[in-house]
Structures are given as structure tokens and as C-alpha cells.
Length: 296
Image 1 (cartoon, rainbow, N blue to C red):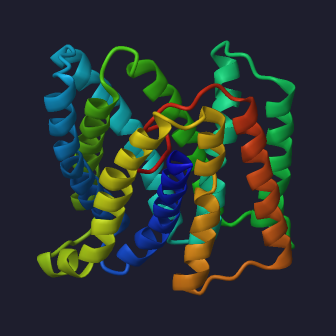
Image 2 (image 1 turned 135 degrees about the horizontal axis):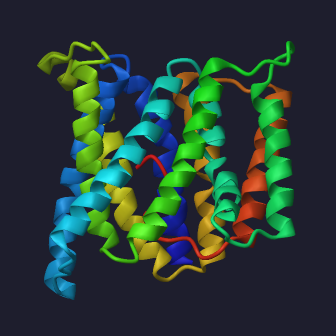
């Protein structure tokens, strides 16, 4: 019960993170926000790494392999985060939360391409989630909003990120990889912000965005990641996957309470079907790994 409550708290923290990302862009450009957020996220993991290495013994992976894996994962993370962050300029936190959750559907689809087995329940979940996505994102002209399309593209990259994590964590500690990828993602965010993004960032802007950066960077990364690791060590893996999928619901709740976002009956029906599809996908999936949830 305690483990499930911790996972529910983790899902709530991640869900409200979409709200923090929206509010943060009142002061910072999307790429500057990514850079600052993941830099704080990397720093927030250092005490956790220090504690675990002190009490569990240091893990000594190959430095070259760790650097290579961090660069690959950090680059994928940056691309996915960019789709998500820029997409939030054109869609709501509610839509972003549910569409991002579609990564649970993309993972088994991409896994099939890599020779992984995909059962009937998973395909049923995919079809139900696709119908939900149609009801949520497609308007009366049968068009999907630009921001929702960016979130959907991001969800596919989040799925690739999970598969990459699954590969690299077989040869290096997950926590060190997480910290390394956050550093790479932060560096890429800052570089794009000052070059291609043409964003101007001042100390005053960073201070104004401070509360949202603290939440999105430290709370959703350092705190929630630690809670997830602790909880999943004791929780049933299927239960863990289902509870963490409630992140999308908390994103919608946060959007309603803080951003005054509303969903009509059709969109609510779409959200319900997408959540059902995600849960079916989790019921049919293999054991989730700590740190696999996206956007952290």
C-alpha cells in the first residue's frame, strides 16, 4: 500500500509538471527552459547518487561507455523534450499530458520492429488509444492541432528513449545514466537557445521563472525519480505501470485548477479511451524499469 501511494504521488508530481512547463514559458523561451530545467535536474540527482554509492558501494562502469550512452540518451531526451516544450506553446497541458502518455502505446509497436513479442491485448490497447486520440485532438474539420501533432511526435521519441534506456542500463547504472543524460540535454538546450532558437535570457527572467524551474527541474526529476525508485522496488510492476499512467489525469487536473483549461464531453471521452488503452498496454507489457517514464 505504501509503495502504491508513493507511485501515486510520483504520478501527481509528473502530471502537474506540465503546468509548470506552461507557466515557465511566460518568462523563458522553450529551449532556455529545457536547458535550465535539466541542469537543475542533474544537480538534484547528485545527492541521491552520493547516498547510494556510499551505502551500496560504488559502481564503476566504463567511463567511455557511460559518456557515449549519456550522449545518445541525452540527445534523444532533448529531441523529445523539444517537441513537448514547443508543443505546449500551441496546446493545453491537459492535451499534452494525455498525448505524451501515448508513449506507452508506441513502445510495444517499436519493440515489434526489434523482434519483441506484442500480444493481442496490446494491439487492442493501441486501437482504443488511437480512437481516444482522435476524439481528443481532431476538430470538426477533421484536423489535428499543430501543438497536438508536436506532442504526438514527442510521444514517439519518448518511446525510443525508453527502448534506448532498456539497452544501455544493461551495461551501466541507471542513476548515473539518468544524471549524464540530463547534463547532455541541458547543454543542448542552452546551445540551441542561444543559437538556433534566438532566445534572449536574462538573470531576471531566470529568477522570475525560478518557482517553475524548481518544480519542473528538482521536484519532477530529483524528488519524483527517487520516489519512483523506492516505490518500484516493492510494488507490483503491473500495478506500478497502471498507477504511473495516471500522470495524464493529474496533468488534466492541474490544467483545470491552475490554468483554467476546460475539456468538452468529446475530449473527456477521448481522454478516457486513451487512459484505458494505456492501462491495457501496461497489463500486457513486461516489467517497467525505474526511471523509464518520460520528460523527467
